[in-house]
Structure formats: structure tokens, C-alpha cells
Length: 235
Image 1 (tube, rainbow, N blue to C red):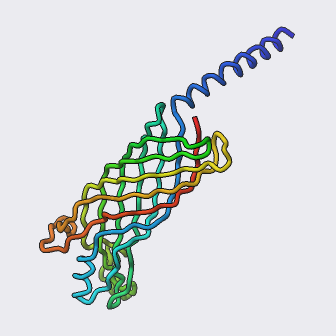
Image 2 (image 1 turned 135 degrees about the vertical axis):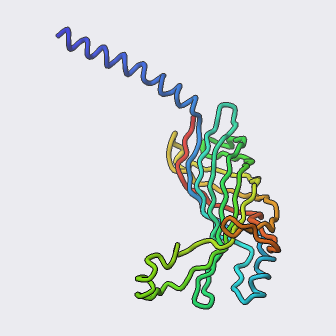
Image 3 (image 1 turned 180 degrees about the horizontal axis):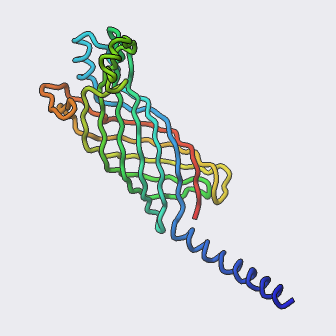
């Protein structure tokens, strides 16, 4: 009987202390969100397209489909800190038995400030700093001769290998909104992000470890829009 009372008291005491500890931990961690996104980005590739077209290659336009992954924490006082990664799908086309394409991406660490419009809606400006770039690749013919494989067991280094690439710093200026439809402490979050990605226009293309001269200026800079979905939580 004494053992049973001791166990009951221990469980009661434990339940009473776990709640304040958990609440304090959540208060220190703050509110936040983790999300996936899809949208569109404008990019600065007009002169690159002109150079490709002049050589008979396909042009890809000055826009990209964007996919992103991110998360941020809302600290006490409303300051936010987080990180995001964005992949840019610019284009892929056939050319003389090869697949030619352009892709890019960038990642940033960001700070912002959240304003809660209601228990379910919050908005925030965001400043992100990081790096990104793009690559132009050419895929060799997917058909390889049997005897060629016997003569060289690795006739193709990689099926899709960037031939020309460039990297640069980026600055992401944006404003976002998050809605927690259920209004719960933790649950579904849907959001929207509008902004502008700034990056220097660069002609310093690289071919593996070689610098390429006389390249067309290009960058991944431009306005963007993203639709977000993920998990959001409150303090």
C-alpha cells in the first residue's frame, strides 16, 4: 500500500513539474514554421539566351519554376531567424541528339520581424544573405555502343554534367504571410511570399576548374512569388 502511494505521489509530482518545464522550453524555442514552397522567379538570362540562339542552341527565357524548403523560429520580441534553400528549374531541350539545359539555385540565412494580425495570421519582412548560381549542361547521347563500353567501361562520366557554371553572393528581400487555418498551437500552415533576389550580373563562367573568358552576363536575380505549405506553431 505504501509503495502504491509512493508511486502515485511520484507520478503526480512529475506531471506537475513536466508541464511548466515543457511550457518554458516552448517559450524559449518560440513560435515558428517549417515549409515547402513552389512558385516562379524572374532571372537575368536575356544575353545568355541571345548567345545560345546565335549558335543554334535553344533559348530558355527569363523565368524559372522555383521549389524551396525552409524553416524559421520566431524569437521573443518578434525577431525571426531561419534558413531557406531554393532550386530553380529554368529549362531543358533537345539539340542535335543531346539534351541541353540550364538550372540554378541559392540558399540564404535570414532575419525578419513578425507582426501578428490575429491569432491565425502573421506577416513579416525578411532579409536573407547567402550564395547561389547556375549551370549550363549538355547531356551526351543516351545510346552507347556495346563495344565502346568494353573498350572504356566508363564512356560517360555523368549522365547530366554541368559544362559551364557560375556562383555569386545573393541578397533576398521579401515579405511573407502565414495563416494557421485551424488556429491550434501546432498544425497546418499555408503562406505566401513576395520578394526580390539581388545578385551581381557576372560574366565569370567556369568550365570545371578553368575560367571561361568572354561569357555573356547572367544571374539569378529578379522578383519572385512563392506559395508555401507546411507546419506552423505558436508560442
